[in-house]
Length: 149
Image 1 (cartoon, rainbow, N blue to C red):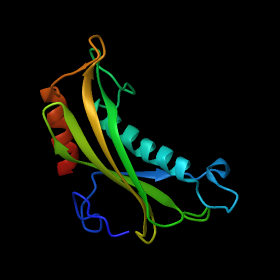
Image 2: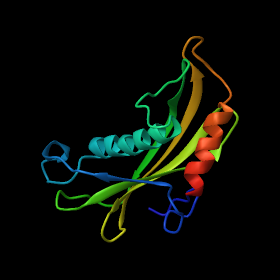
Image 3: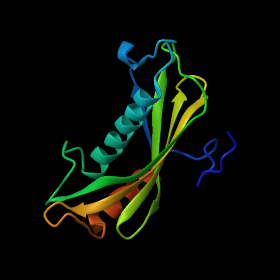
Image 4: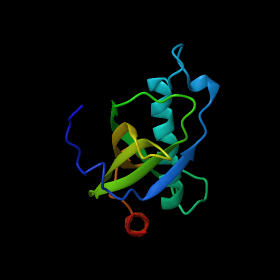
């Protein structure tokens, strides 16, 4: 697949690397990691990123404010087999007024081979009103810190 991404997925420095333990239940009958399981692996990477934004409090909301998934695109580039050691790499490449855009990839932790690429838009929402709101300044600063390191 020769699709263009918002960043060069081969050279971009992803901010968060999350090692993944593949499970037997991730496999399809051909002993490949099922596409639905790969989406769940990308979610593990999102969760790791959100924990950093929320200062590792284990909460996905603060003061009734959270990020929710608004859009999700996944490209399955190569098969993952159970014998691979994989990691999910995650970065926020754009911070808007009320949303963030993430780029992620599942890679072989030893060779760097890219198996899967995901793009997400996450909207900042007030849980009380259920409406999008501007991203809190504190979260913007944390995202900036995460991406610099």
